Length: 159
Image (cartoon, rainbow, N blue to C red; front, side, top):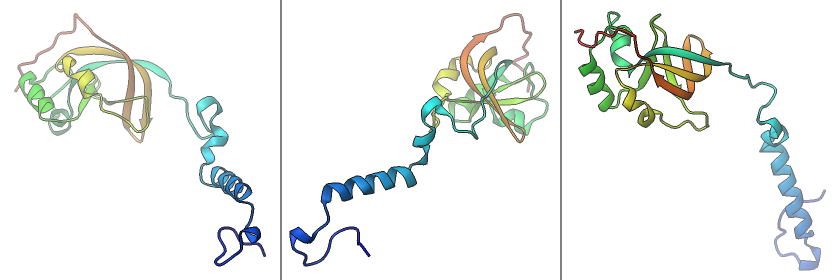
């Protein structure tokens, strides 16, 4: 039975061909330990689901208040509280008039924060367009485009 690797106290002429051994080990590693290589073309494996592109409309704000306070809606909210919570690090969301919460995510894995991009929109009613994902009631959006909608009546002085 042939052994892989180094033999103790062996004469160099008795050692296996090193370049063959390294090539073989590299091929085994790529085949066994890194299976995504076989699916790299097209960027998706058979189990990947293509997310539909959609537009959502809602209020950009922190997540804490609408989760804890059912009276906070996409049009009636406390702007001062939303700004303070966002500045202190509360996750940012888009809250629709129907009460659905969308979590903005990036288009990359590992994910990166969307906070810097969304901070200028805190307390504003927007239309966000991008890929929408849903899993067991949790919704997320990869925002390609975001614009403030005018003409939506907001009551930002609610308590």
